[in-house]
Length: 176
Image 1 (cartoon, helix red, strand yellow):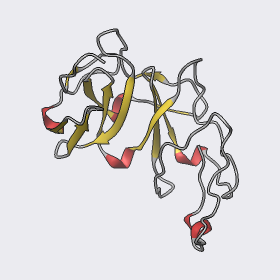
Image 2: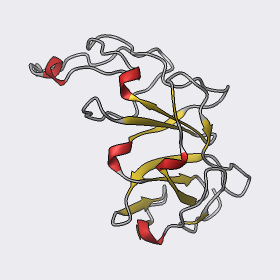
Image 3: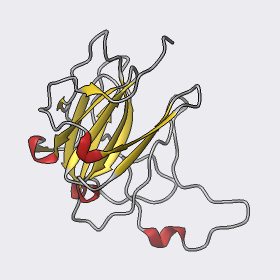
Image 4: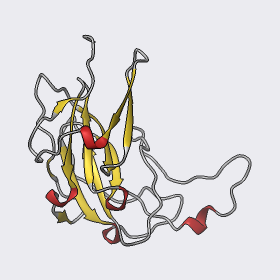
């Protein structure tokens, strides 16, 4: 996780500027603007989530790597980052079309660098977590499969369930 003042990006050249240094096996997944008052949620593909205050992340320059946001188990990776200001529940979707919403209040604030807590029950029926978004009742989402099938859902139609559940069917998928 990295926090850099927006002023550092005032003078962008035609050829671009460096915004973060990444290790060979790292990848940038999300960028958000914040106000120094937000809680950050990191969600992993193996169904873990950590919530910490952004003030736990010290500001760094553009060409830095940042600091550890979450300690990951082997074979796990961060798949999403959201802010508490983006919604009142966390929508989680799995690779086999299952999903749910969980109230943000169910996630206690920790210090960054921890292992987090379970936020999704991974089974053979669900597959790994592939997406997480903070949403409100009035939001709509669109899900698109690799085959190009699209579905639009009202967030109010998606069940609000506890942290350690698998959720409901959001979209029917063919095998593979």
